[in-house]
Amino acid sequence: MRVMVLIKATQDSEAGVLPSKQILTEMMQYNQELVKAGILLAGEGLHPSSRGARVRFSGGKTTVIDGPFTETKELIAGFWLWQVKSMDEAIAWVKRCPNPEGVEAEIEIRPVFEAEDFGAEFTPELREQEARLRAQAAAKQ
Image (cartoon, rainbow, N blue to C red; front, side, top):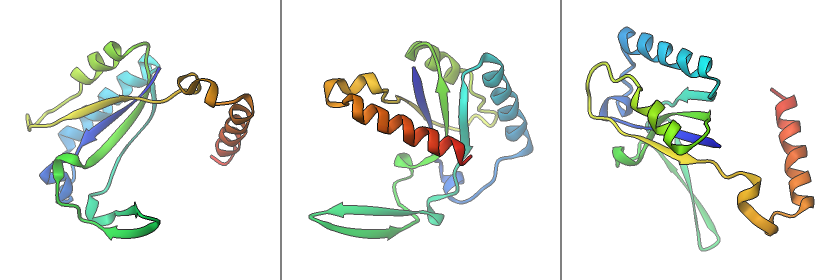
């Protein structure tokens, strides 16, 4: 199963405070463990919301809202995409995540939808179309 591991923003990450050498070193070691275990598919940190935008859809209208966004607890500072055997395995790995400065932090784990999750509505034609799109996207990387 694939899971998206979402690292919640903090006041520091939203203020653009970059991680210390210690944090970077410990996270690099952690990422190396994820690679050795064969579960890391992708992972990146995100710039603060002040550099982002939201697009709101409402009643047939779209509105662009420039950052920063106010509610830090609802913002994402980074992510990993992992291939794991179970949610329990993902939780065990997140529990090992370094927090060298001991700050209050929250990490969310969410399963990624797989084709099988959509049932009969995801027809063979749609599955074939998705496979073509994934192949096209991979070829561009």
